[in-house]
Length: 69
Image 1 (cartoon, rainbow, N blue to C red):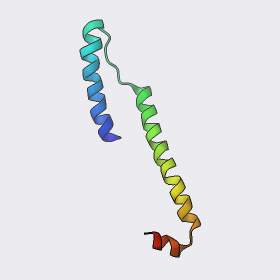
Image 2: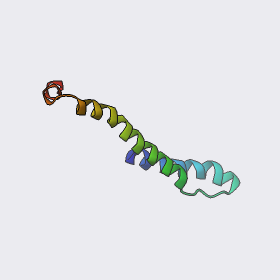
Image 3: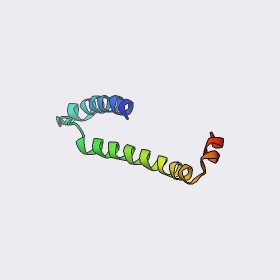
Image 4: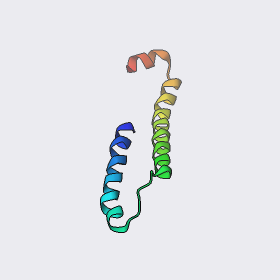
C-alpha cells in the first residue's frame, strides 16, 4: 500500500498537470475519497484473506496443526 500510493500519487499529479491543467487550467487536488476507498479495500481484503485459514487452524487439534507446518 505504501509503495503503491508512494508511486501512484506523484504519477497521478504529474499526468494530471501535463494533461488536464495544461490544457484546461483545472488544478490537481489530493483524491481523499479515492484514497480512503483504496485503503479500506486493502484492509478489508487483508482481513478476509486471513479469516478462513485462521478458522481452519483453530478447529484443528494442536498435533495436526504442528504436522501441517
